[in-house]
Amino acid sequence: MPPVDGAGASAARPRVHGPGSTRRDPLVLLALALVLLVLRVALGMREPVTPAARLRDGLRIEAGQATHWRAPKAALAEARETGKPLLYDFTADWCPPCRVMKQQLFDDREVAADLEQRFVPVRVLDRRRETGRNAPWVDELQQRYRVSAFPTLIVVRADGTAPHRIEGYLGREAVLSELAIAEAEARGALAPADSAR
Amino acid sequence: MSTAIILTTLRQRFTSPLRLVMLLLLGWTPMLGIVVAPQVGFAPLTDCYFLALVLAAGMIGQDLSSGTLQLALARPLTRAQFVFSKWVAVSAGTVFVVLLQLIVAALVMTIRGAPVPWNDAALVLGNDVLLACGTAAVMALLSALVPGLGDLGLLFLAFFSGQVLGGIGVMKSWEAVVRGTEELQRFLKPQLDLAFLAQGGPIPWFAVVSYLSTVTLCLALAVVVMNRRELSYASG
Image (cartoon, rainbow over all chains, first blue to last red; front, top):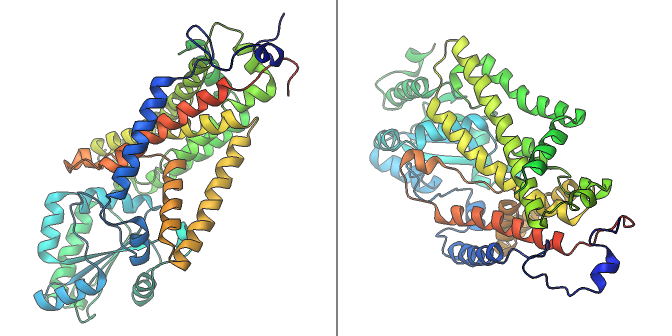
């Protein structure tokens, strides 16, 4: 039995494999891949915020997101001005419950709009696992609120008092009712001790 | 596409004891999370990237090093058909495992009296189908380049290099390097989050085009590489 596509046989054959050959190149697929690659570069250059800048700032800004996360300094100023409590979402990309919480709460336009009426949201994205380090403000907030697990939500007044901690994700309704208690505490309608459970 | 290659690949993958053990560990360990806290829905199920890698490792390279590639290509089969069949087999195998996971997870939730979030299940399945197809395409390219399980080595080398370069880029504030490594990661793990469909948000065109570009490029290059590979009973 002769060798299949043997080296000897191919040496006598032209390198271009025409119709009928079992080795013809997928020209349509190659052309499509090239077009998509060009589009990818063009769209990548038009991304409003480069990933590098996101990394530097510790922020993740996604197109079409329902919740408009504030940068930490701007959030603090907004909280002082409006009297709304700050809502820190301590999260990480690799954390599955964080992704579910994001889908069920922060990506839901109705919930997101409601939360933004009541809080000033700040996403504190941990990137240690991906890049080996965090932006300094991320580390500082994690230390200040002793965050050791993801997801953790912290609701706090602009002056940093009356922090309320929600650790883990126990479902949409549970988190929303905890947030309502946290908001009442932060606005002074409920003393933190009253809500101790 | 060749049904015989698809079925043979699936049989080969699902009868390998080592792969089965790894699939069981990766596929069923997250179930413990659902048993403990069924109210969190499908959150404990991580994405199917490692499941896809277990099924994809050596998808072409092992046929090459074992000598079965020469036999397979003795059939009236183009090399493009061979590559596409391998890609479909690995993608379908991964989706099958994910489907099993979702069904068992839904059963556990029902038994534990927790509501089954069917919308989330659809989203998880959609995202995993795309991730499985993307990962299989990348592994098809890497596996066409090197024999045996060298594709896994290439993948981890590229990941590791990306992590190191990315870390250096962040420390030195070299935005081009950081951007380059992000694109490398995007290439090595092609995925598309379909949450925008569920939420009715705008289409993230860059993410869509990036995903399609990676899949088409990898498959096209895998065929080109295979077309230029010289095979004989006497080689390698």
